[in-house]
Length: 229
Length: 229
DNA sequence: GCAACTTTGTGCACTCCTTCACAAGCGCTT
DNA sequence: AAGCGCTTGTGAAGGAGTGCACAAAGTTGC
Ligand SMILES: NC(=O)c1ccc[n+]([C@@H]2O[C@H](COP(=O)([O-])OP(=O)(O)OC[C@H]3O[C@@H](n4cnc5c(N)ncnc54)[C@H](O)[C@@H]3O)[C@@H](O)[C@H]2O)c1
Ligand SMILES: NC(=O)c1ccc[n+]([C@@H]2O[C@H](COP(=O)([O-])OP(=O)(O)OC[C@H]3O[C@@H](n4cnc5c(N)ncnc54)[C@H](O)[C@@H]3O)[C@@H](O)[C@H]2O)c1
Image 1 (cartoon, rainbow over the protein chains, first blue to last red):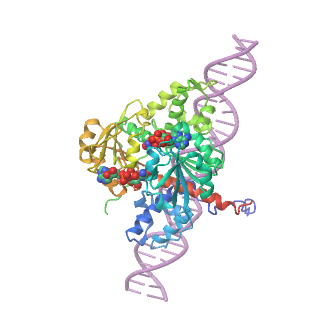
Image 2 (tube, rainbow over the protein chains, first blue to last red):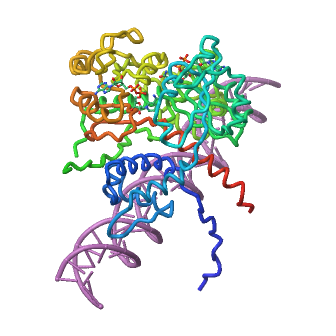
Image 3 (cartoon, each protein chain N blue to C red):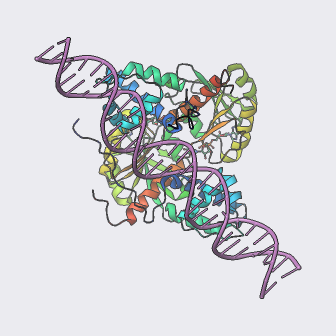
């Protein structure tokens, strides 16, 4: 009767609008299906896939449904299709040029990590300020002075940068990255970077991760009564 | 095949219970207030503290209220009190013994990272299987064969372990850690570890972080074309 | 000692995420 | 060709987390 009153203002159809929580799991799903493909698996059910990825089947199905996923009822998902769909959503089809600033212990490890190349990223330059490092070769790349950043960023169209410098230098490095056109930053320094709202920063704080583990560990220890099921 | 990873049904007991989202921010708050103390700041308002930590003032106040933290209305929070309260909640008062398994690129970086010691963690041993690594000294510790794990874990009461081995070895390393009494694991290998429900695993996946950045980057790029609403 | 001012602590509403449950759809078998 | 068993896709319910607004509570100034 009153169907006119609240009629469709409810647009906001999320065309390409994948929930943030889902986005956070897509890389995991992608890796799992790639592994399955390597093992020769061609089809997989949401239940099996969810178990491998460590999530619930319902969550997995809902996540995939946001991609407009094409599973087959009664059968499951075709692994190759999932790889393509998730890969396209994550932009793995293209190759993102990436730079690392700070080639210390962590920067070395990152530069030598092979896992990036296989997931759609190409390391185009390493930057450091230490004179004894500049000019040396790390992971097949010559370490360049940080002042070269703008030129490299422009030439290669770098949009993603990794900050692996000590905390005191991180902010000014971030400023320079932003000035050079980088608007996605992965920050390993334990500081909160202040950047324009158009720039996306993700922080990886290893000490925090350990502290969260310690918190749960402590609570478990204090809780003398074990949580019996 | 037959073992089903039974998802944790344990209901989060709210007795002294801090919400998980809050727990995830406590390490950040702790670092910020320690920095403030180093700068000689003695009191701080929720607004200033929130700005420094990059969260909203309301969220910060609610988070702190879960610790039963006592701020002073009209004034703010006493920095030294916050350090103690958050530190106690996170278990920083005690010193958690930690071991690292896998002393490759990443393991080296972690072992040399000074940030752990200052946050309540003590690195007690490094393990690796490579004969050329065992016996060498890294970050002031001698790398030991992985077989020594049970003895060390028992002697030092190790409850937290870090997995920094290649993916194929991670599961068996995790199994050994669990067998040795470790029930908190920080996993850097890009695999989902299967462990008993009593064991807490946190995964740090650097490639995933980059992919999430790439996703947003890509969507931003695509949005330039349309969405003129 | 009182009033004005400042900032906390929190109830409430809202949004986002997860879980549940089941109808719809597909292939296989008979 | 039709039924049967299996699995997806998704509304709806439930729960967790966030933002808002304001009363309560303390401090400062006069
Ligand atoms: N090593 C780890 O496992 C680890 C763990 C967690 C966090 N972190 C953080 O990651 C960051 C790097 O850690 P690390 O162990 O590699 O430190 P590091 O000291 O070994 O390396 C830092 C590098 O950054 C370079 N650098 C300094 N200022 C610079 C500037 N303005 N421009 C360019 N380069 C500059 C230095 O020359 C050095 O090579 C630190 O902020 C640290 O807190 C490291
Ligand atoms: N390097 C990075 O920046 C980076 C980034 C993201 C993820 N990762 C992941 O972290 C892990 C380690 O990376 P890495 O670059 O240090 O690799 P790496 O090959 O340099 O080091 C791995 C080390 O583990 C040791 N090891 C192998 N099997 C073992 C076993 N069964 N017991 C004990 N030790 C064993 C090896 O001897 C080697 O020293 C990998 O899973 C990698 O995918 C690394």
